[in-house]
Length: 330
Image (cartoon, rainbow, N blue to C red; front, top):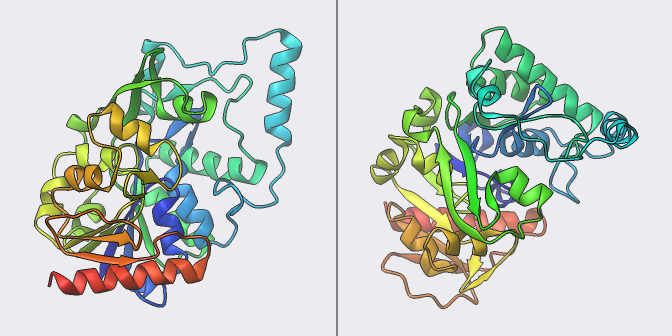
């Protein structure tokens, strides 16, 4: 049995080729929910959905976001209406009182749909509407995620890190903003001064997630701050990781990041933007998988391979390196 911690695109890309190495029926994927937003009343879970759509073979693999070939008529009409009415396109973050009213799972991450700053496809939107409606019927996010996983035919067990709200809030020189506002609307350009995982201290790990952390764990090449950080902020998760075997794949080659805002975010929260910084952020990791070109000297076992993941063959190669690293710390 093996458990993957998934956020962003790093770990989902690794999962694309992991099946020959780790049987999907024996694998659990614990998804980050700190990046979730409620947009116009429906809950969007980007990191869960990337795994969901990839496993269902409908993911737009050019963008690693949304459903391939999806139409965007509703999204485009929302933008047209806002422009025609002379409304500020936003992002339109709802006021403090609205953030904590209504369904608890959407706290601190509520945006108006006016002009819709995140592009949501029409089929994609149906997933979010189904998710939100099932939550309103009284199901937990864990139950809803498993229901959607069944609908997409996932072979792995996909579960959220928590059924409670945790919001990744980036503190910048331009003020605080939800991670999606920082990354999608502002292209990651504001200077990062810190990151807060709002609500984490009051959250509990989902029961299936905590159970899964008793198995061997692989932390893929995801962003340590906003993809894995929200999980570590939930009481009980890091402690569970200290008590099991953990292998982490660095999203850096030395001090060069593969993609995304990871370097700026690492630096903004006080870590060196490098593999050495990742090792500092993951004191619970027993071993690391590093790129052949990464000469970082760590105090833990290291397995090296080409860690760039562009296709399934690449992903399988990195997954085999993860298995070798796990075997080294048994």
